[in-house]
Amino acid sequence: MACALECHRRGLRVALLERGRAGQEASWAAAGMLAVHDPENPPALTALAELSVALYPSFLASLQQQTGQHVPLETAWALEAAAGEIADIAPPGINPYGFRRVRESSVDPRKLTAAALAAVQRSGIDLREGTAMKSYSVTAAGATVHLSDGTTLACSAVVDCTGAWSNAGVHPTKGQMLRVHAPDALKAGVVGNVVVRQGTFYMVPRLDGSVVIGATLEDAGFDKTVRADDLQHLRQRAMRLLPHLAHAPELECWAGLRPDTPDHLPLLGAVPNPHGATVRTVIAAGHFRNGILLAPGTAHVVAQLLHGEAPAVTLDAFAPQRFASQPA
Image (cartoon, rainbow, N blue to C red; front, side):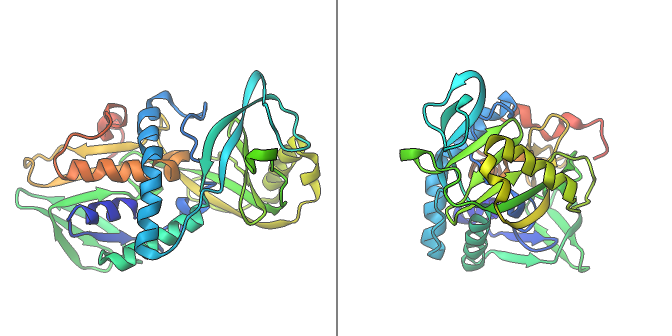
């Protein structure tokens, strides 16, 4: 949706094909941390992440201008595990030893996807939910996209944003999560609510008083089954950091499918066209744990590629062809 909105803003006619419901897969399931410098991120991701977080204020302002929906920053700081350091401030009950405080925001992805969907619907973008792209063919004259309803679309550019369903070298990595009711549990004095992150485990507070706890990392194909023992393991990790979460009522639990790649870096870039530069094919998939963080940056770069411009950041590490030995 971010790519569609940016391309539309820059004057392109856009059809957005969604196999299910827009924004209801990895985006809806995410925690929403804008963790630019998370130690778990590959170093090659930094420049794109920094571009994206710099674009976030204008991205959110544009969504609000188009829809009237305000998507707030839920937090402004995070406590990040760091051996040998002591956080200068921490929520009551959390031992500050082994943490450092870093400036890092988060958003609620469900508020974000709702606003993005409303913007798409009001923009005149041709949104087709329940419609998958079965295949597409490229000639010198243009591209023909074959849809699951038996119809075709003619276009001059194709962007693959299909996440875990992309057949460009992406596979799903399952993540189970839960949300509990724990108002002010992660409130750290004057800085307010803070995210607490320890490796791939995290607790993310929301403005509504809930806390998102996640997440598992599982190679389980497209299975989204939620398992009680896995959720209990997550809750136990949370309790070890913050004991009074032991009795926090569970509000919901779910599983999402992160679009992963062998090196955990996105596939982002143009695919060479054997018929010349007339038709542009761009891959924008495989964002793994950082789809929410990278949304505006990815949209910005995709629009640049479709307009034949040099991208704002180097895309060498994200080249879609780097897994060419795998089935395409």
